[in-house]
Image 1 (cartoon, rainbow, N blue to C red):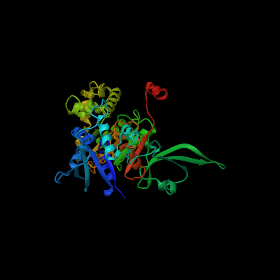
Image 2 (image 1 turned 60 degrees about the horizontal axis):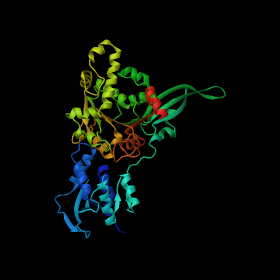
Image 3 (image 1 turned 120 degrees about the vertical axis):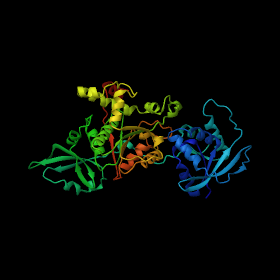
Image 4 (image 1 turned 135 degrees about the horizontal axis):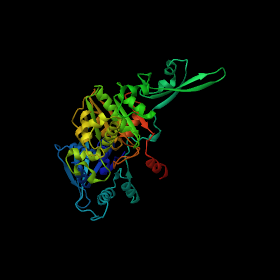
Length: 464
């Protein structure tokens, strides 16, 4: 059977460096790259984000100790180099096509795409690209084109972690635990227990409800209001979803969580309150807030192009954290004169003024760019990783492997709000974690579907 020959677009490599191993398929396929892609990767390798990381990983994978062999292609002045590429102890050949003079010399937009397409057409290669516009353009010109959408999750909106059971008031909880439905649930499933009673002729619901988690294959009841009263977070959860989230995050057995929800659902605010609770209890030494700084086709929004020092640059991207902190400070200032004195200062800005700086220092909150998480080990911290939908599975894995045994980490995201140029709402770090949370006893998850909005925001949500 003849090998398939694939020409890779830059998007395939910047999506996930492990795509190359997947494409190679133990020697069943051949991989080609044009020098146009090499130039694009070279321009991104200094970026301190996920795209820069994958660019650097590609160049690291080129085995420079091996002799690079070249041959004339027979296509005019083209030269094909054959080099070794190694990743995860798997080594294979990659063919790099250099063309001195392209047929297309000038183009107002899409010059590189057109040149990649030109190579694919001339060599009868299958173009692999996750750039949908390039794919459509290729197919329209008679060039075979495919995409790689590994780890795609269908219907993420249908993923739920709350399950309802009914139990007669005279029966023990063991009756529920013995059912096949309960046994089929994974640990950290959320349980809503509806109380039943009966008359001589009928069975009815009393309206009383109990909530809990399945932990170690047992129902562990969570008296949500008592938990909140006992721990007294600065901002108290105001609906069932938020109460379950808070109880889940501070549970001593919970290590890793995935939380999704739209802006206004409270995922960052409640996660911050949980982290502060854990710091106060001495269960962790502090809070680390991470957020992917990647943006969609906006070079000026990349961290390195912002004005100011690193802290000021990160400030542009850390607005959700500052917003949650400043909202908390506002409520504390409203609660007493003592808090007004303690948290004196202007908080109506993302700039770290006196009150915000004091709050961050008091609660041992650290802000970290994910680029700096590589090569470090994080211990005794509550880690909040925000914008997980803009991170690939590889980045989620990279961050997760930095976390020590005595840490907790929660991944936050809105899987419908994608800024990453090579991800989609069906394929990103947040939905991958949601899917795994459905079956993993180690991973807890919740989707916050109730959004607390202003009247103005609510009107636009419903009417536009």
